[in-house]
Image (cartoon, rainbow, N blue to C red; front, side, top):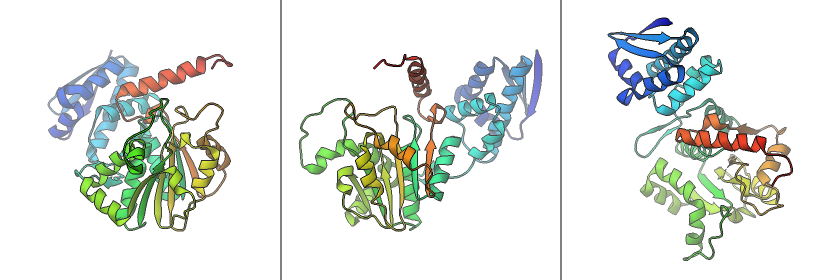
Length: 323
């Protein structure tokens, strides 16, 4: 049994570290089977030597994030533990700072994982960025945040968001209303992200001015998109022909972000995904970067990570030749 002590400078640091009802510290105690006790300005961590060493690294990393003004949550506490378990605790400080934009409710939007940070860096530095990964990794949300930040900085004049109108495994039949009403259900995630960033009224104002356009992929044919930030969402459901058509819309002073999850392809059997082809065909072109997310980059409920890993494991065990 080993005991180690960490000094805490300010009481508010200890409060933030422990979290609501001590939930942050309980996560660390349960992960490493250690005891963490706060006595005045000292934290005492006791348990098996290796576990104590890891718990200390996690706590020191979390205190470092707090010192840089970061808020702690269940998600980033778990992520810090994962990095420490992999021996990458030196990379935790990279998570601090880097606010992309402020939402309509005053909340800062920041990358929460190293994968998300690399994704945002690629969007800043490249003309075309392809983000591939499972649900909940923030691919679409961060792309919209980057688009709004570029628009507010007057780097571009328009934000264009599009996605293929492909149903997710079930036939919805004929939908009521005019053409916009029919395509709106497919574009809802894009609306949600824009409403969060801008607020409904500001969003509507920019739509009326033509600064923001949300449209199905079919509307892109024949256009040249200059001075625009263009996001193609759910790109796994494009055909190779649709993907080529979309990529060749790129005009001057424009950026493109393409997002998708190749494990959730809803195309009819026998049709190749344009996203898979694009990652392979474009990998050696300057100005284009592909960023691959993993289950570690999921920032939704922890169960989403567990679900993704379970499916990955089941897929790896499935005998070849099975449907």
